[in-house]
Structure formats: structure tokens, C-alpha cells
Image (cartoon, rainbow, N blue to C red; front, side, top):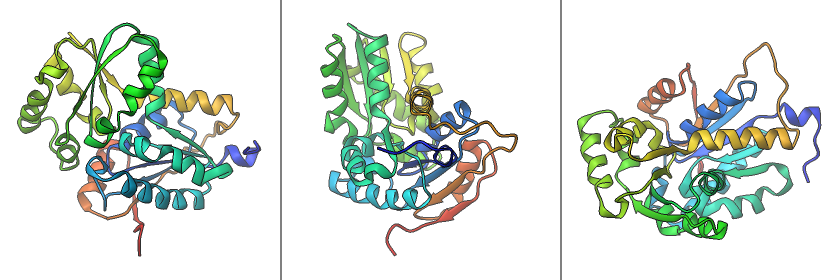
Amino acid sequence: MVSTSPDLTTRPIGVFDSGIGGLTVARAVNRVLPHERLVYFGDTAHLPYGDKSTAAIQAYSVKICDLLLKQQCKIILIACNSASAAAYELVREYVGSKARVLNVIDPIVAHIGQQFAGRTVGLIGTKQTVNSNVYRKKIDDLDAGVELRSLATPLLAPMIEEGFFDNTIAGNVIETYLSNSVLDNVEALVLACTHYPLIKQQIAEYYQGRTQVLDASDVVAAHVHQYLQAQQLAAAPSSNPPVHHFYVSDFTRSFEESTRIFFGQEVHLEHYPLWE
């Protein structure tokens, strides 16, 4: 068990993802918990995780956790559905009592169970997330009568990483996926990849109000907030805003620019290769 102390509450929250996608979660956490310091790691050398093997994602995740533990993070949030599906249990075991580990899947599953019992829900995500069947298993375990219809949408994450969102190319790809008969007549659509909030507007426009589009980042941020309060790990309010740190395994100028635009503040990226 991690002992609670004033020292522990001042430690940062570690957040990691394969690239830019987890910034949707980091931004939502920052909005809900403005006094918390964030240490973000984007594994840009290995993105996207969605088409990697389980073993590879586990290896990357453990290496990233080494850095986040060095930074004395009190919480490690796996802000990636593919890594949450492939590596959550392993990471929790690896980290042990040094930090608490949270994922992005459990909060959204709980939300679906509460809000959509007895209804039909669609889900789009990477091949890794969809093929792992992790959402289906967890939703079935709730026994809430939710019919889940999942579709792998592998082009979306790399498209977003390359800056193709909010344009006609993105629109065509999104429409092609969403018109798949698997998703016919779903009452809600789970965006089961942390990249997808960047195209939430276009997805919502496609459905024209017929289907509720669920942005997991807000649900996850609310869960982190509740967890910190329950565990008495929340940082005390301060007049000085916290200084966040952003690391990447492969430095690119475009990622720095995307991070700045996306996080809504000036960001300095530090290069931290996972393997020397």
C-alpha cells in the first residue's frame, strides 16, 4: 500500500500514450485538476500502438514506467486504449507499491453500464483494442444488457498523427468507416482511442444528433479526480500554476507544434529515447 503524506500529494501524475492521442486525456485531466503537475510521455518512436503486438506494447509500457517512476509520479495513467488493453495488468504488477496505475478502459465501461443499460452501443478503436475484446468482456461482466458492436478503424490514428483532421480527407475516411453496417442503429458510439476526440466534431456531424458520441477523455478525467479525492492524493491548491513536463521517444518539430496547439499552452518537449 502507498502511504499518504503531504509529500505524496505534491508528486506529479504520469500520463503516457503512443503519441499525440493521450494529450486529449492530459488536457481533460488538466482542466478538471488544474493544481496537478503532469508528466506526459508520447512514445512517438513506436506509434501507433494499435497495430503492434501485445508483447511489444508491454515492453514499451514497462520502459516508459521506468521514466515515470524516476519522476516520482504518484499516479500512472495509461492514456491509450491499446496499451490499457495489452499492458495494464503487467504494468500494475511491475510498478507495485511505487505508484497507483489507472487505465482509460474501466471508467468508460462503468459509464456505459450506468448510462446505456439495455441499449445498443457502437465502438471504434484500433485493431489491438478491438481484437483484444477487452471492452466486450468487461461490458458483458456488468450484465447490464448492453449490446456492443465494435469496428476496428486502423486508418484514423495515423491520419490524426499526420495532422489530417477537420478536412475533406478525414471526412471521407470517417464516413467510410461509420457507414459500415456493423454500426447501423447504434444509440451511442464510444471513441475507444484517445486520438479520436480530435475528430469528434466530424463524427457528430455524420450522425446529426441520432447517436450520442462518447468522448472517453472527459469520463477518464472525472474518474482520476474522484480517485485522487478518495485516496487523499490530490494536490493542494496553489497560486502558482504547475509546470508540466512533456517527453517524447522521437523528437519531431511537427509533434511539438501539434502538442502546443492541442494542449493550449507553450510546451517544451524533451527527447527521451526508450532504448539508447
